[in-house]
Amino acid sequence: MPTARPPELKQRADLRARIDQARTRRDAEGLRRIRRVVVRRDGAGCEVADGDGGSRWVLDFCGNDYLGLSQQFAVVNALQDTAAREGVGGIASHLVCGHHAAHAALESELAEWLGYERAVLLGSGFAANLAVVQSLLGEDDLCVQDRLNHASLVDAARLAGCRLRRYPHADAEGALRQLKSMPGGAALLATDGVFSMDGDLAPLRKLAIAARLQGALLYVDDAHGVGVHGPQGRGTVAAAGLSSADVPLQMVTLGKALGGHGAAVVGDAAWIDHLVETARPYLYTTALPPAQAAASLAAVRLARREDWRRDKLAGLVARFREGAGRHGLDLMASSTPIQPLLCGSNARALAMALALEQAGFWVAAIRPPTVPEGRARLRITLGALHEPIQVDALVEALARARDRVGDEAAA
Ligand SMILES: *Cc1c(COP(=O)(O)O)cnc(C)c1O
Image (cartoon, rainbow, N blue to C red):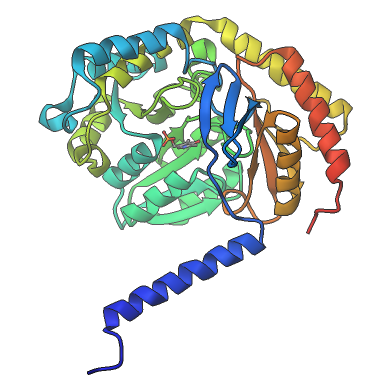
């Protein structure tokens, strides 16, 4: 009888030991991540399970439902109506038999709203970024990205096998230098419109010039911009006074300000047809449920028309910043509904988040690798369903938490 274990079992044990070690390390560094169970949600309120069989209501200041559309009556109604007629599933991929009238209607509406010829729906923003970069670039090509771009854009370049060069955050001259670093081959300049963990805006006008100078394609991931910024909520590209001539391709998510799920890429017919026919994250996946597309169509129509949601949100952002400034809170330079409060150490961010939860406010402690080492923060998000009095109460609670936690938890 051989005494050694078969090699494949030994490898499995090694792998298990490795993940156990990684978990121990995450615990020690305050990097453990857990999921909280939301039992119910009602507007900005959330009933969250406490893990001991009980639950408590908190005010949600960490979700991305910026316009308050995810529970809006017309949006939910569109989903229910379409589901009642068409069912709840997408049934097949778009190119087999999953492309439905509801998808086509949403694509037309999105293209028209954002000022592009065509749109194509994808299962998520993450998948959309993979689809764009992978279907356009190969190993001889270059993808130039802001250092703080979303993880999905970085992974997209890795998957495409192209050269990935990153420039310092929001540095358009850095972007230009990187574009010049590799002549020959196609170049894509990709940036978030609103940076998801910092809340600041990309310097789109300068990036458009850099891209134009080097003949690169500028691609903007406007996950947090569409619905919130620009005339009729058309996003950061429109807000910067740019159009499809400057930004030939854009990605917008349906899961944030539009309150639903999924994403779309907009561009001219040639770009979009290429994606439809060649992008693997489009070809080899089931279509979004038509009911979801119908809900997003209703959400887009509201987002276009109801300026009061944006106006109210802008008022809340100003109120929050003013209050936080009065209390000397360490805010970052953001004019968007994403208002991070820098904490530094992981331990301090976690202690602050815990103190806030005890006071009835749910804010997320964002830690590495989502943000750089030593830049842990509370990521506070505001939405049109918040009331001014709730924002004031949040500011008070933040100041109290800061005073209580102090610097003692700083590592
Ligand atoms: C959330 C986000 C994505 C991913 O979108 P999903 O639809 O949630 O997959 C992509 N890019 C940015 C900048 C994001 O914030």
